[in-house]
Every structure is written in C-alpha cells, then in structure tokens.
Amino acid sequence: MYKRILIATDGSELAAKGLDKGLELAKDLGAEVDIVTVSEPWAVGMYDAMGWSVGYMNSPEYKADRETSAQEILTPAKAAADAQGIAANTVHVLDRYAADGIIDTATERSSDLIVMTSHGRRGVTRVLLGSQTAEVLARSTIPVLVIR
Image 1 (spheres, rainbow, N blue to C red):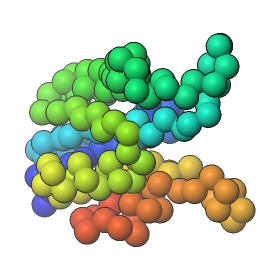
Image 2: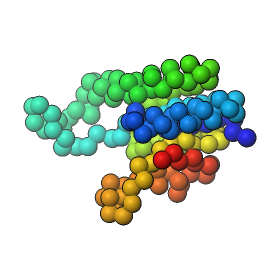
Image 3: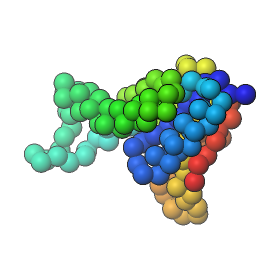
Image 4: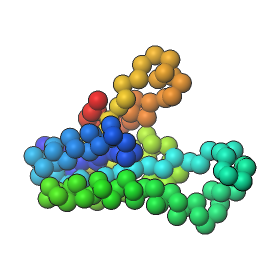
C-alpha cells in the first residue's frame, strides 16, 4: 500500500504522537520513513539580549543554531525509528514555512503518504494562528494522515 511515508514533526508532545503513529504504520507496512522538521524563516525584528537582531539571519551562527535545534528534534525521532527496526532518514528544511517544506520534501522523496498532527483549532483561533496542517491537506497531491 504505502512504501514511503513522510512524518512531519516539530518536536512537540503532540507531534510525538504523530511520530509514534507514523512509525507504527510504517512498521506494519514495511515502509521506508522520512522524518522532516522545518525551520521557518527568521522573523525580522525579533529581539535578542542586545536589542534588535536584524542581521542575525545573515550571520554564521544562524544556520548553526537552526541546525542544532533541528537535530534536537530529529535525533530522538530517528532513535525511535531505529529502536523499532524501521529504515528512517531525517530531513531538516531551513527557512521555509512548514506546509511548503513538508510538501516539497514529500515530492522530492517520492512519498506515498504524509503523516502529521493537528491541534484541532477552529474559528478565530485558526484564522489568527493559521493551520499548516490545513494548508498541507489543501495542497498535497498525496494522501495525508492527520493525527489529533
């Protein structure tokens, strides 16, 4: 059925549930897994201890900091896959919005299925905060399994 599953995670407790369900499905199907986390673009005008951090995204530390943060998410996810004997690759997408990074990675990796979680926001909260899950659902050309 599914031979290659993309599991999206942001390292949150909710995303860990999606990772577990995605790995369980991959194990049952004997599918390969790609685990992706996306670092969204740095918002200009974010504060640091010295004031405005306008040039941060052009500094050598920027990419290293983002990669370190991504590995804090991907390393335990990969370890969870390894513990279950599942072939898994990790992918860090830098400076993309989550939905874009997830969809592009699924295309690049020839995924058959995307597994991700949703906070289940509705109404004004969804409008104000947006929903990357809803965007993936709307734009993906492959099936998306949403874990709540």
